[in-house]
Length: 417
Ligand code: HGY
Ligand code: MN
Ligand code: MN
Ligand code: MN
Image 1 (cartoon, protein in one colour):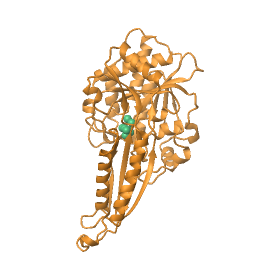
Image 2 (spheres, rainbow, N blue to C red):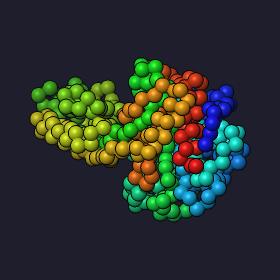
Image 3 (cartoon, helix red, strand yellow):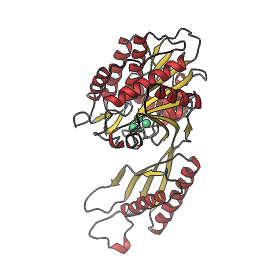
Image 4 (tube, rainbow, N blue to C red):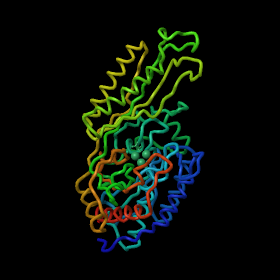
């Protein structure tokens, strides 16, 4: 076991985070980042990470959709491994810490353990998951969904991007080959999986806490709504005769907001993040509108009940406004519960380091939501300034990063011994 706090080189870690942030398609300079899965930029980021993993002496394996595994071999090669990691794709105009903190802190924790002379019995593996964000294919966590069996290869291959290219075509064009069926992990592949991530919320900072030991991850659902009206000339069609798709959609979106605010569960959140208007001309009545729905709650049953209520009320609005409505649920995943053994290991590590900590839930989803289906799962949160995330001003301090890496290192050492 480790006696004193692992020595973390936080300057090196911050430098690596900044180097990764510079690999971006965002028109704004870092810390704004855009890095969409299977783009040239995503591939350059993967190459950069791989170079760091190999420089640390880790054995790197890449699976048929780009999930990347960097392994520090333990003394018992037959023992199930201990995994850590996160994602390095980033939504448009994101910040530079979401996901990347996990893929680089996993490496830094291993380097600190190597420097301490610790030798794991179980191999320790850093995973960089492909496509945690839903940006390109509309559904998030495709890498961990396929690894865990939460999504079948057939369903994954049906996903298409905005150019209407299917997932299988796009991943092959990006250089990832092999059968999708090879991505699924064997049941005993990991003995434990721990993800370090920024909180993406205000609780830790507000409580002046360094570490969050995550006990559960909220249940995310996503759906698409398409409203079809009649359209027509903005000057010639008088108000009583209109079947305006955008006004109907606007009433539906306002209803979604009211339903979410009235929900019995304070953890229920609803977001309409994307809206497209056709034909999108100043002097033409909108004939077709599509909008997205992102709906979450730590209480899966309440999330499902609210989704049903939204469907009923939007259909009533469509009828009253004489427009057509189609809605399609893309995913409605159950929440995940962390394994008590892993939560305890995180709490013990933070306690031995004298880090102020609390148990808490994750309102954002993560690859750990799906890894929980194939391994005992846990997450470690570190504070981010103002709780801000998915924005260029997302920020976690070197002190927060160092505390997170030290806690992760001790947790991994405990789980891999
Ligand atoms: O939306 C989420 O919770 C994650 O950041 N993809
Ligand atoms: Mn994110
Ligand atoms: Mn993330
Ligand atoms: Mn996430």
